[in-house]
Length: 451
Image 1 (cartoon, rainbow, N blue to C red):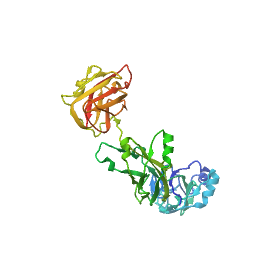
Image 2: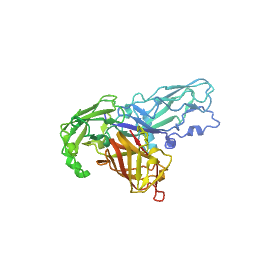
Image 3: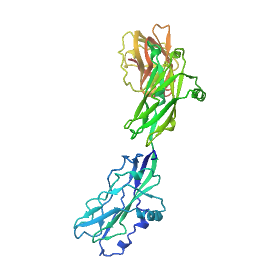
């Protein structure tokens, strides 16, 4: 069996099949002395119908599928039984008439091969209904597919030349893709300020691999570490990672039926070198071993797991999220270029003009533990800053930790989160460029702190 998912687009071919379905026999009858039984080519379009490699439907097409009713040109004199069938013998005729290369769709069947047109009626109460219970026709089939349906007999009525419809399926293929997690989840950052950090030598990567949909059959991906790729990675990315002894658990990543993700543990032998700012790289090569209807994403054939000290840096958001506001205290004070910032530390009822490139200095009155971040509320988004630089914190005003700078969004509210909670009393930072233009400048209504 080919291991892929099939997309099929089924559509009506009303005009393309005119040479095959002309109504010459009907057109010569006036005033309709003969009662003809016929079919309308359906106008519905069934697009983006998805099939798995085993033939199971994902979405887009009902099963069974109601197609069209059978019809008469004159009212039925009595209850009439109309027989319909799937006819593979006319596929060649269709292809020749329409200059196509369709292949007959195997495995479909008509659920109601006999339909009734009640006395006095022109149309059957039911529609021809096709079942795709057996989906083998959609497996191992790279051609465009066609399903001809014909009227086989019509009792006392005459079967018209317009007595057949053609359902066509334009087929393409795609597998149940196995993909590695995003690059950001492959970074193991160790906080060396935590007690016993040297012993945290296992990095669990949750959802290391995921599938497009839950596995229909077991899938096995083999994972191996290839340290020879470290130098190549450094050359291509201008980095200075080092190799480190590590093992993977498991080395065979197995998706059982209905699994959609799998975790991976990376076990390091010795991580103490990161205290000296060493950075390590674990290149993992992935290869597809087995799994009907699945394949490994080409971009996931090699993934790089990074191990390093948790850097002091800032992340920015325009949403407060889970941050909890620290209630301002009367002891909070601040200055910038000789301007008093105390008012905007206490509330957002006023505002202060901040000049680009100046240092803001803040004193929270006492040491605050485990501060997660801080934020700005600007007068309006166009009175904001484009960035901040050299955000530093200190417990005593003498020794400072520098979290670096950050680019801001053009939003009225900005929230900056420390890569790890900070303990400090003093903060200083340099204001960056104006967010909109120098003509508008920067006006801050409030500076906030969060835990």
